[in-house]
Amino acid sequence: MATETLDITDELCPLTWVKTKIALERLAPGDVLTVICPAGEALENVPRSAAEAGHQVALEGHAVRIVRR
Amino acid sequence: MSGGSSRRRFLRDLGGGAREVRSADTGRESVPPRAAQALDGSELERYARQLVLPQWSEASQLALRGSSVLVVGAGALGSPVCLYLAGAGVGRLGVVDGDAVELSNLHRQLLHFTPDLGVPKARSAAAKLGFLNPEVEVVPYEVRLDSGNAVGLLDGHDLVVDCSDSFDTRYAVNAACCAERLPLVEGGVVGLAGLIMAIRPGESACYRCAFPAPPPPDSQPSCARAGVLGPAAGVVGSLQALEALKLLTDFAAPLTNAFAQVELTDLSLTTVRLTRRPDCPDCGLL
Image (cartoon, rainbow over all chains, first blue to last red):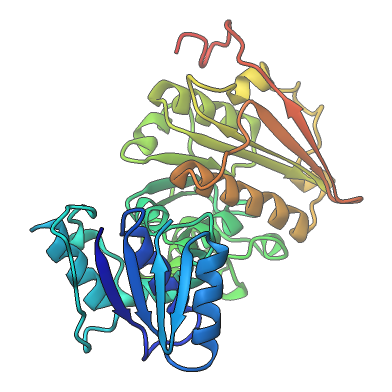
C-alpha cells in the first residue's frame, strides 16, 4: 500500500477536486492519498466529492485522508 | 523511470511544484511511468469541468489528446461538432469542406461570421478553432469529399464525423470508413428533424445497412428547399459530437446498431434498432 500527500492549498475550485481526482486515479485500490486543503470551500467539497466517488474519507484538520476504492 | 518517481513528480506537479511532497511509497510499481503524457496545468484548468465528471478521467483526456478526427463538412452540423471536439481537447482535427462561406449560411453555421463571406469554410473553421483551443492541431482540406478522394482523406485519422449535406457524400464516407474500418458518426438534419448514428464498421450496422440505397433524386427535400432552423442543426451536431467523444474515450456506450431520430417540434427522440445486413455492399464482407 502506498501513501501519498497532495498539497492543494494554493488551488481554487474546481481544480482542488480535479487534482485530487487525478491523483486518486493514479493510485491503486487501497492506496492512501492525504490531501492538504485550504480552509473553506475545498475543505468541504474535496471530502464530499471523494466520498461520493466511493472512496473512504477521514478528515484530520486541514488534511483529508482518502483511501482509494 | 520508476513508477514511484513518476508518481512523485506527478503529485509535485499537481501541487503546483512549489511545495514539498512527502512520500511513503512502499516501492510497488502501482502507477505506470507516463510523465511525458501527463496533463499540464493549463490542460487541467481548460478541461476541469469535464475532468470532474465521474465518467471522465485523466485516461479519457489523454485518449482524446492522442486522437485524430476527420470532420466532413464545416457547415451547420460541422460547426458544433468541430467546436465541441476542439473544446474537449481532441489532438488533431481535419476539416473537409470545398465550399466558401455564403450569407445564407450564417443563421446556422456557427463557425463562420459575416466578415468570412467568400472565405473557404475549411479555412474559416480552422481560424476559429485555433482561437478556441490552440492546443488542437487543425488541418483544413478545401475540397469536397467524394468516392475518389475519400480513402485518402481518411488516412491518418482515428474517427470520422460526417456532417455533409448530400447523400452522395454520405454514402462515399460510409463506404470509405467501412473499407478502412474507421469508426464513424453519421448525422443529418432537415427542417426540424434529424438523425444520429454511431458506426463501428465490421462490428455494428453501417449507414448502408440502415439505408441500403439513397432516396430517389428529388424525393427528399434538401436543406435549401425545406429549410432548417439553426438550433435544430445545433442539437443534431451536438449529439454527433457526444457520440464521437464516446467512441474516442469509451466513457459511455455509443449509439451503435441503432439510429436516433430527433423531432424538434415536440422534442421527441426515437431510437430505431438495427442489425447488420450480411449482404451489405459496404460492410458485409468485414
